[in-house]
Length: 491
Image 1 (cartoon, helix red, strand yellow):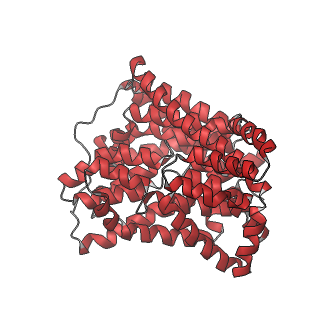
Image 2 (image 1 turned 120 degrees about the horizontal axis):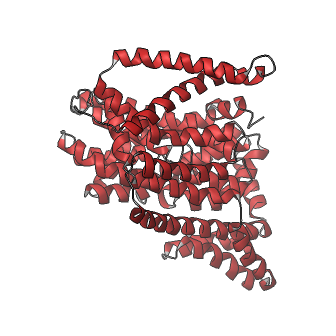
Image 3 (image 1 turned 90 degrees about the horizontal axis):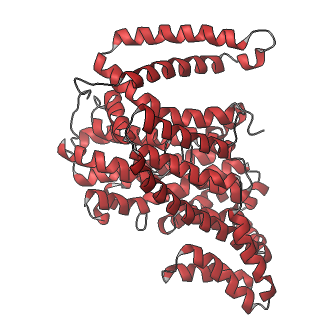
């Protein structure tokens, strides 16, 4: 009888019950009806145990860091930085929208935050420059799905915790797929530029840009340290520590970095340099997170805490864009969002207990394998299933429900667990922008005051690009697996 927990759960969702209560009520009721009421304490004990986790603490910290950065006026700086680089292209503001989403992804890891923050800035600007409101809303919604793919990513933290995978490996595996989605959307915008007569643009760099002396010096130092660090990593000198003093070599590379910066300075305008400098401090966040994890200095959870500390330093002391009175609303919003996610994860762990008791994975494995034994065919079918699920269910709950069921099946078929995690995460993330129930569609509708139905039609070409990227990721494992393997996080 326990195998009926999934249909019962879906019925509860259809009548409007919140996901977290459905995750507990459906298996709980079936345990009672099955005469296994003695297992109920295990169900609810696992609810607490599911939340009581050190790796899971990364979620609220990353959410808090994103909130602080957003409240500190980072969005405007990222948009100006993107305009300086992409504004001169045909359909320039659409490209700016996409590039801003890629950059914002490294700060928040949330599609909803991306749509809300960037949409409120860029949709009115695009409309003012000759874009239709539905097109502006559609490209904002489509590009916002990059947020949960490029690290840090909330849904990847959830997947790693539920499935026992490495958070660092998933973060690294999401870098290339996220960039591919962004580049694919830019290609589609360029193809649509002539057909739909998208506005021509020129490089947008506001004249008379100013920057405080403090921020200018911070940006000056960070740029050179980042370039030297990149050169140091590319040189492979981590393995040559016995022969060469690493600090001396890094000092030499700092001089090289200074020379590179001096050359670039001579090629660009003063206003362009200021725009770039104003974006340096915010964009340091993903570098700190990934750099700390890759160097083995900190775990993902510790990196998330460091990200919060850095966000506070930037907002309070470097940019001076926040005051103490701004901090409480930020903490309150982060606490509410984090509590909802953590309660959902805890309920999912309890839900997973009943999944194991019901033998559902074994039954579904036999059912799926009866369709075909070819992994390529099964991956195609499972992508179709995930795409349909993503139309109606948010990415987090879908991963929590389907991950423990589908993950072991494809691992047995020879698909690497990290590869399957990326397939599932990207597919369900795209579902956030998929009609009829895509969450970011509703957020984009609210921000733009355009009907969801209208945005849903306008977003179809961009969804086609994202589906193509999903299948490329699915059938070319190297896309997502190369970086984790090169860095030693995946064997």
